[in-house]
Length: 216
Image 1 (cartoon, rainbow, N blue to C red):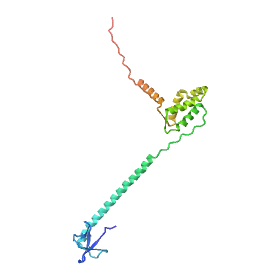
Image 2 (cartoon, rainbow, N blue to C red):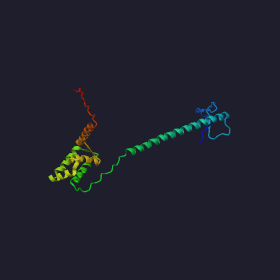
Image 3 (cartoon, rainbow, N blue to C red):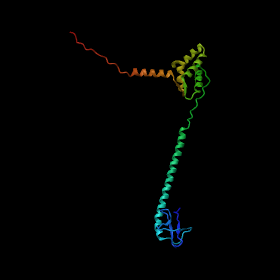
Image 4 (spheres, one colour):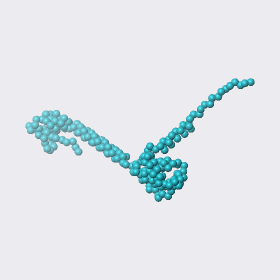
């Protein structure tokens, strides 16, 4: 790639000039001479105005500088575009929906607690991450109502230290990956924790001692 050249010649003159590349004037020569209705030559002539040849070095320097700046600007534009595209790809990867591991199916229930866990899991799968407390309570209450008196006693023994069936279900649901919204069980646990920490870290009361006179 070379700087483009354009040659001008007046009809009444024998001298051929370079066009005024620096000022972009088509009726002036590079040397500064004004030309009246010049003819543009298709081929490079053997002899060119020596004054134009002197100015040609300046024109070449300006042309190469402008070409280099244009290339740098184009490169910077491509870099910006690349960063935008890379950012879009990163954002798409970040915003892609996370596939959570499916909750495995439970084996066939053997104990009453296994049956309660199966009922609970079927309920939880109807919700996306959070189970309303009233739905959990109604479902497990219906499960308890289907049991006989002796079966409820056995279920209570299987629950053991976890307390009531509802309390056990709330804890089990969280263990399986769901949260129970508006749960009084959670609120009760928090109140008990606050009361315990308040009593445990409460500053001891100062004991006032009375000093009396000794009696002889």
